[in-house]
Length: 203
Ligand SMILES: N[C@@H](CCC(=O)N[C@@H](CS)C(=O)NCC(=O)O)C(=O)O
Image (cartoon, rainbow, N blue to C red; front, side, top):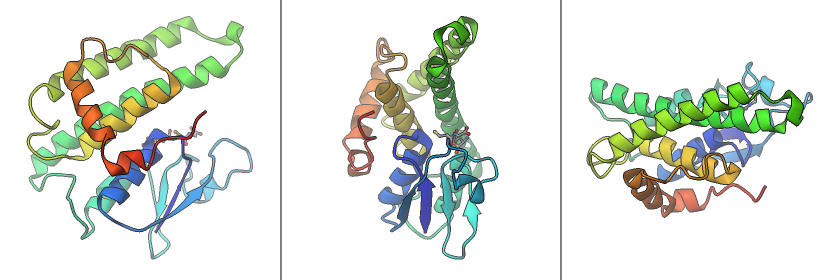
């Protein structure tokens, strides 16, 4: 299996963590999606990472699909519940965490533009999405040991990757204020070997 991605992408990190948690061996192909000459579109027509190439040569994207595909393989632990409705609940939490990350990425990209071209309205709009998304995750995290009950799931991994990205890019540096359950959850996640091994390189 080959994982096409960059070391700084939170969505790629999510897939690396899943592969490590499941003990699956894979080759990491370091490929930036941004340059014109990027090879990423060979694997994903949308030109985004991650993409996963399986042993038959088929390419899978985007990260929620790759995560579901990996969970459908034999390896354990299972990160989606067997119960179909519970699995949808976990995938919705994954979408929530990924959505917060999407907004963080938009902010980072917007801030790379010359100051006079940046839209304060857009930045505020994305910050509001992040605030509401994190508040919703805090509410879920306050309910139990993990986001979906007593077992770690894809939702916990996606959430910790998103918070890891907020920390890495210093987006909303005060995200932890008044969100004690989320802090507790991600601190627990960051202690796992899979997270320690996928810390993004210093920017
Ligand atoms: N929904 C996608 C998002 C992936 C994504 O946006 N990846 C970024 C890197 S962090 C990317 O490849 N961006 C390139 C682009 O937007 O052209 C997923 O979950 O895989």
